[in-house]
Amino acid sequence: MKLSIIIPNFNGEGILKKNLPHVLKSIEEYEGNAELIIVDDSSVDSSVGFIGEFISKNKDFEIKLFQNETNLGFSSTVNKGARNASGDIIILLNSDVEPRPDFLKYLVKNFENDNVFATGFLDESEENGKIVKRGRGVGSIKRGFLVHRRGEIGKRNTLWAAGGSSAFRKSLWEKLGGMDEIYNPFYWDDIDLSYRALKSGYKILFEDKSVVVHRHLEGSIKNNYTEAKVKRIAYRNQFIFVWKNFELPMLVSHIAWLPYHLGKALASLNWSFLAGFLMALIRIPKVLKSRSIAFRYFVKKDQEVVKEISK
Image (cartoon, rainbow, N blue to C red):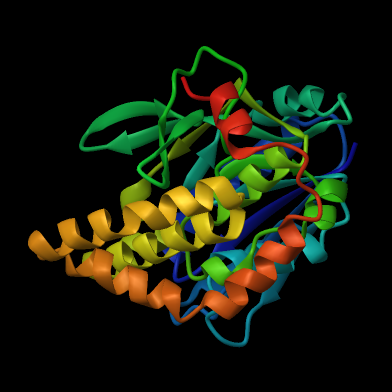
C-alpha cells in the first residue's frame, strides 16, 4: 500500500527545518512505499528555496514540490497535493507537526477495512507549557449548531479526522470531492469532510499508536493572522457548515435559534460572531451548490451520526 504524505506550507521555513527530517525518518521506518509532497501556498519567506535544497540533499527519497501562484488557503493547498499524489492513502501533516518514527505502520492496518475513510492520529499538543493529548473528537447538536470538543483518547471512533494529522483513503477522498474550498483559508474544512464521510456511511477511526507532536504556536495561522480575523473566519465557517450539511429538520431548528444567537452576540458586542454571520450570508449561493453535491451521498441523518460519537 503506497502512502503519500502531504505537507501544506505557508511561511514555515523555520518549522520545516525542524520537522522535515522527522518525516523522512518515518518514511525510512515504513516497510512499504511512500512519497512526500510539499505544497507551498505562495510563501513570502525563504521556504521554497529551502525546500528545493532539502529535495536536492535527499534524492534517495521521492519528494515533490508544488506551488500556488497566489495564497489560496488550506483546503485548496491540500487538494492540490492530493491531486498530485500517487498513493493509495494520503496523509496530511501540518508543517508544525513532528511525527514519531513509527507512526505510519500503525495507521495502515486500519485501512484493511474498505469502509474506512480516514484515521486520526494521537496528537501530543503543546499548549501553555503542557502536553495535551488530542486527536479524537466528539460532538453534539445544541441550539442549532454542531458543538465539537476533545474526546477521550481510549476509544476508536471519532467525529472527525484532523486536517493536520490524519490519513485518508484517496479513492473515497476523490469520490467525496476532498476538502471544500469554500472554507478557505482555514478551519471547519476537516470537520466538514469527516462529517460528510460519516453521513455517507463510511467509518473514521482514531489510532492512538500513531503519534505526532503538534506545536500550534509555531504554525502559520498563529503567525500570519490576527486573533480577530481568526475568530471571524471560524464563526463564518461554523455557519457555512450547518447550512451546507444539516438536513431540513435540523436546519429549521438552526434558523429558529438564530435570533437568540444574534441577539446574544449583539448584547455582548461580539462583533466577530456578527461579522462571521454576514460573511457566511453573502456566500449562500456557493453554500447551496456545495450542499447539493454533498447530499448526493448522504445515507444517515444528523442525529444518527452525532449520537454515535457524542462521548
